[in-house]
Length: 109
Length: 117
Image 1 (tube, each protein chain N blue to C red):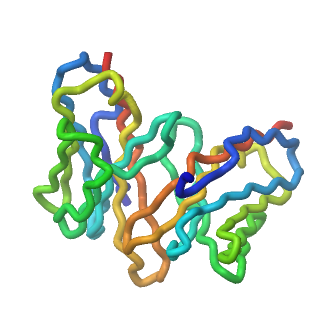
Image 2 (cartoon, rainbow over the protein chains, first blue to last red; image 1 turned 90 degrees about the vertical axis):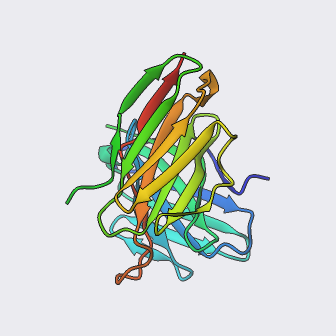
């Protein structure tokens, strides 16, 4: 089983739609969780950390379920500029991150 | 502020040649990471340094790959000899740990797109 698994997509949604991505991780000792965003032919950038109680940053909401080893990202009111690949990321050691292969989102007019 | 700087941005080389990728981390960051990204395998950690010391190189594919960090502002990843299966985007990232913000983040450079023919 892969350490971090994501549906590769693509998810095709119209502007204004709400879309949700899920991610599962295999190592129950994982300590921290993140969503990174990667635009086409660019480097990954941190979108948001994921906290146990769930957290929101504008149109983005992240949730963590440690019992099910499951992380989610919800995007409300999708914009064209949200089109990107979203990487689910898990930290287990002090510094090392394990990345999922990403879920591609395409937002159309 | 300058982010992580990588060079070259693109490299095309022939099988068997030596390839050297370079990285300058963000000033003040004490951790540096080398990753490789391919469609098939996604983003994989190759090696990481803390305070210029290699901590975990278990992701380095084989002896053809080597990495050095002679000082806090410079690191290299070398492939010798290169093979077509090494074709990928190689990212360097740096981090200051949790710092004062309490938030952990790795900052990525723009990557080096390597093609080995």
